Length: 192
DNA sequence: AAGACAGGCAACCGCCAGTAG
DNA sequence: GCTACTGGCGGTTGCCTGTCT
Image (cartoon, rainbow, N blue to C red; front, side, top):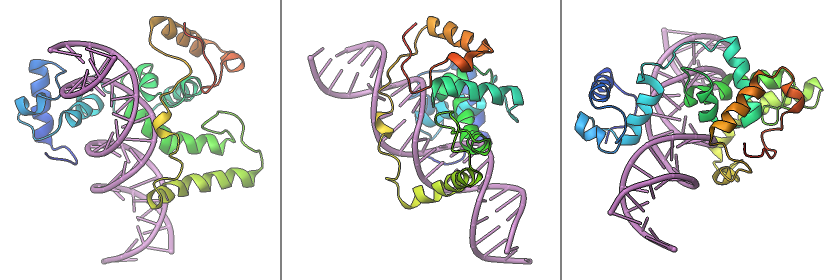
């Protein structure tokens, strides 16, 4: 089973197969398409890169603003956030958040996890940025650091699954005053 | 010029939920 | 009710590239 970056030939095989047979049945797809990849890898490549409606290129200021607002509402629900931003994938948004927006928010004195103001002193802010920059190195040295609650992150206090919530979300996004009224991402939101 | 370092991003991993048998 | 299978998700890793020393 091959791993690592996809080649142009593999992309063509996958695209050609899906345009012929459609999406789905990822487990059997690689064999039928003549690919030496696992089904998950094929699905990921299609969803994040090969799909015709995937938008490439820089994220605009409007999109960035929307991501921040949606993250404030939803937390790290990348697929839900991506679902509100046409052409963008959850992976792309997640990467953008982790590499750009966390630093930007910290620079603005906002805690990217809670969206609440950080301690206002400049030394505290620079300390946070420095911590952020070193976090990756620390993680590589110690995989247990900060992972305690990772597996339990799905134990949500609310559920997002229907059109009611979608409308609810739309109204919040479009509400200029929403910042005054919305619950924080880790607070309870009743089902719509 | 070249080695070290950091940032960005594609891809992988492990877990969970849904579902068919 | 249970088990196995599958798709989907979020967290994490590792490679590539650009910048710095």
